[in-house]
Image (tube, rainbow, N blue to C red; front, side):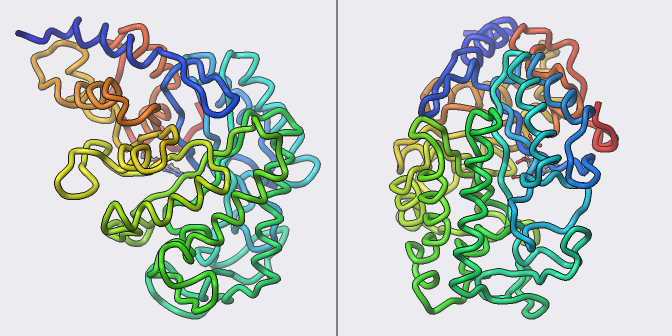
Length: 376
Ligand SMILES: Cc1cc2nc3c(=O)[nH]c(=O)nc-3n(C[C@H](O)[C@H](O)[C@H](O)COP(=O)(O)O)c2cc1C
């Protein structure tokens, strides 16, 4: 049977436009905006331009927005004065407007709560003197020094900061939270043996390395209502080490994810750079697929969706292979995962989701890095 472009477009719309739930939250469709640091929030305050940046995408069909990483209220959490903070009166007032505008546009939204740990090099206001902190004072490139191994008191402070941010998120109108446990930042520095060399209860085997993350999840869970969704993002890869792996086998992955699910994670966001790559041998499942299989929780996939000309041509029926989009749709049809997050394609085109859901594929354009420079 010949697969025509119109078969594919109808199938894409059908599969992607179905609502789905995460804990108490109904997300109107399967398209998620991936968290993307933009650095357009001077003083850590998201302003009107940030409000319209997110609400424009909600109005144009994104079902769930995960905001850019936003620093929790701990003095070592970040290093940029232009990354939004998730603490402080003015900052939270700015965020409340973002949530309100996204809801008015028919979307749902969760902030991505972030602590960068040993990635911190030099801090800007308001905490220029605060040290970098991490499980063992080791950076993701393996170098030592320039930061402190966290004491139990440091750990307790950071856990409390995540819990406060989550409680604030619920109070100011967000639909849930996403915890940034990916890409070599603080939570991931505990999860990964390359940066976690502790010999206490927070280091050693995968379960011990997951303890810090599980304590954060449990504290967040206790700080919010039972029906308030908690999403956990994680990755194998690190910012400085694309080939790094948290888990070499499904068993190792399960050892990390099971305590997090038990602590109260409602959905996992498995960050990969190319969603179609199998994660382990002898199975076609990608990382999100394994995550759902091992935990039974809803999973979000991500990685190079809609970026290249081939994907777009496939929609446009120009004779290109349909593998790109059909691969994604096949996996979603099999319920390998529940949602697909889209990053750069949504920077390029705020209307990407609406166009895909309505089959207006001839209006999609390939990604250009110039789109990083504006908040359009
Ligand atoms: C400009 C930019 C900023 C990003 N910032 C974050 C971030 O704050 N938190 C995060 O978890 N991932 C971040 N990412 C990764 C994206 O969420 C996403 O996983 C990645 O871009 C792959 O998806 P894509 O191929 O659809 O762009 C960022 C990516 C880009 C391009």
